[in-house]
Length: 272
Image (cartoon, helix red, strand yellow):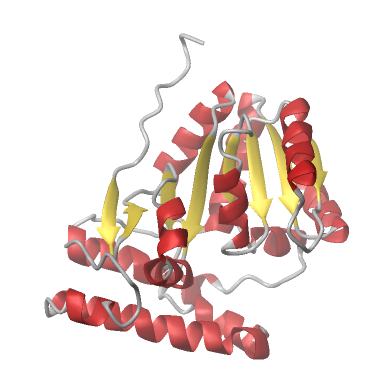
């Protein structure tokens, strides 16, 4: 173990009370692989605007998110805010689906087993087939689709035992926000692996949903593409959370953090 890379988790910055990692793909992949080789318990999540605003509004969710080793800036607006308020100098966001592919590539090269937890059996089958096509030496040591309801304590502990018994060093979780983050946080001391909450990456890589074109992603317009794909499900999420995020940014620019924050969250405004 002495020849393993040292683990130095990315520095975090306070964004509307949420501690977000000012990081890039290289640093995220390096630290996840280093921890995965050790089968070290840790939690990594990728938050777009929706996740940041949800955490800013919900004190309990914010507490668990702030306890994670990495909270990557999944959305371009999140990256822009880190650069604006903290001089982070980030050149790109850290998009969960892209990060998953890069981590899988390095896991295949390093011999780290991965476990897929979430979604449905059909999606998991397609996802595992795709990952194996892309990375033939990748070790997928287990996968399971949990029921669409809260697990009983016995079911939860049994799932953790299956993951540990598989020997996985990295667990990809695709349960959606905030359910995946809640599962990872609740089991961070039970699962002997790095848990990576990647949400819609399961559907994208399985071919179940289309990913936004690259030029829309670069300009922070992925939300528009997804809204067109699923308007009835996503219209409220994007119009409400996007508006609140813009309001938080403007309040921070004009130093009105406390006045604006009291309308969306019971505690903790922006720490500029």
